[in-house]
Amino acid sequence: MDQTTIRKDWETRGFSCDVWTDLPGQQWKNFVHDNDELMILQEGEIEVTFQDNTIRPQVGEELFIPAGAMHTVRNVGRTHSRWLYGYRRKR
Image 1 (cartoon, helix red, strand yellow):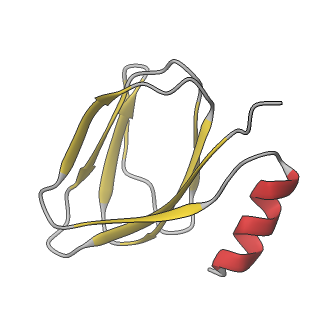
Image 2 (cartoon, rainbow, N blue to C red; image 1 turned 45 degrees about the horizontal axis):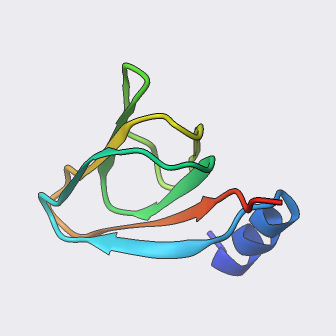
């Protein structure tokens, strides 16, 4: 999975693109953003909960989290997890 290619794709779709890394067991609970968010898992195992759904995305799978949706991200693996995330830019 080429981060440069994903960054270019997301930019054409109006999103930023950054990398996040967490240690095993890390949890980010009940976040709400004013902008739509995209995520793509690069390595590891995470669980994402939003809108009454819990998803364990596969490496390379893109998730869309709409603005205003409360969400939680957990590293459920035994190693670090790394994913790309980006927010829709306001016009």
